[in-house]
Length: 396
Image (cartoon, rainbow, N blue to C red; front, side):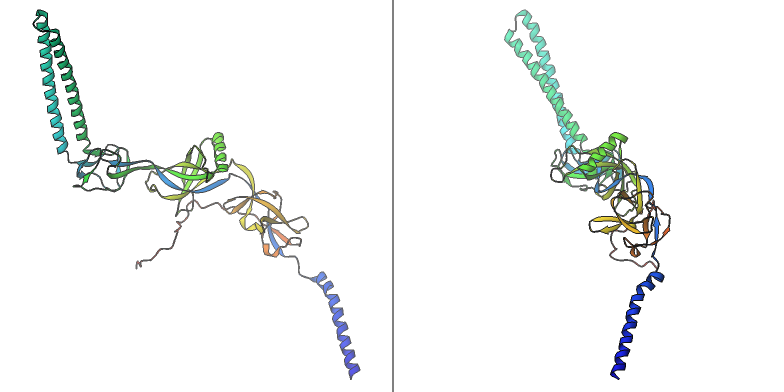
């Protein structure tokens, strides 16, 4: 029995060894085929680099409306938030005290003129009497002095009349510029202080048919803009608001500050944006896109085809023997659904665009050629809500 069992065990062991030795040969002769992947040649197109920055809208003109004289507000002649033209009446102050001051100044002017006429008459008589010797030379000179003094009094009185008339006109506070007026800060019946920079601000006017969009750019970007401006003229800018996807509001870069920030290493730049409908208000934030280079020919692949290998970015290519190889690349900007490749890719390379998980560098694959579909940003996208609403109301 023991001998028979030992023989049986030996026979089983021999059979397992033979099967193990024959397994690789069977797999090599009739094993799994190379995995299927989809490959495509990169898209060749002319592109221009674009840079995006966050910034804020500012009014190109802003005026804090103050009264030039102090007084009580009698009436308000505008609607809060309305558009006004330069010269439109905004506030009216109580003019009665100023009319009284003007009347007093006019009376003083009349008195000064009468004294001047009297002094001239006295001088004329003194000159006649001087010829006959009835008036001394000293008395004649005194008459001339009184005429000069009376004339000066007339001029001073005239100046007081003009000042009083000017103060009376200041009781009508008008819009110094055209634009959108803010809410009134005072109501009729309130006493306001005016006449200096510390006076009460009655309201504020901003011009909003055009707005500045102010943002900061790096030194390298600033140099690119300056070279582009010298070559092609104005640098174009496109702005979007917080709830917009596309950069649909055009403008031009019109200003760069006169010095670079020492701590930030950036420079302040302005773009002029149209706002004819008044939808954008100064102080709102947004994002601007500007051209960062002249147009150039570029190769593009889908963003999903780019692989990350530590700090490197690679593409999986299929060579003439249908073997997979990893090619390190330098990435450029994103264009639509495509990624611009600066270096590491040729126009006739076959890039794996689908089935990346089934492809390993150094292994064979079965490639199937496909065409790439370039998709630009939508021109009229749906609005994006930046955060969820706090509550919802049922309509029906």
